[in-house]
Length: 208
Image (tube, rainbow, N blue to C red; front, side, top):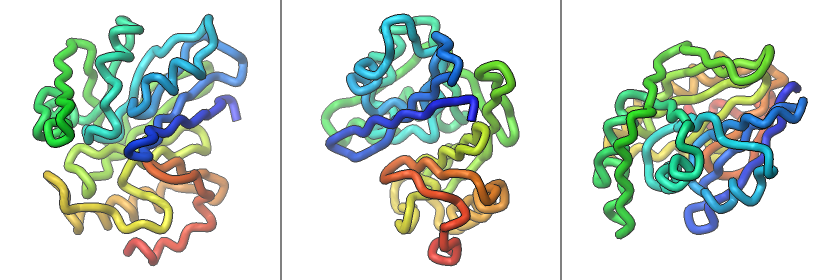
């Protein structure tokens, strides 16, 4: 692959943040979610910076470092769904209020992604967006080369949680089918929690 993927985990919530780097050692890096600011900063090399953050959804454990990362890298762009953009501005909707550490983000650097939108990351490397609601109304899944970042829309051997605000069980099943149909046998799933796993080894019926 033309990219390198490194994961850091929020120790309290066990949520994954993924750092996407170029295999050619370019200085620009990207994040999938930002639940562990310190972990990201520990991995970045001195000449590297975060160009953009792609949010799978707006729950606290996946966004809690957003203000710190943008303060560190003011030119950073946040990519997310329309629902997530709105949730970033409401600590009750993004659930941070209930953890006694409210997160509110109102930066003007947020860009909306919808179904099949693409973003160029590196030379010959692009990110493609899938809308995968169910766990959360604004959930997105991102595909980069043979890597699929599913957030909490698909977690290994775990039923999708749909009881939180804006969750929907029927939508969750439709989203899993969409991820399945967009995954090739050589793709690897990088979930919001837990270890990565190969798409061709998934028992899809477990989720459906």
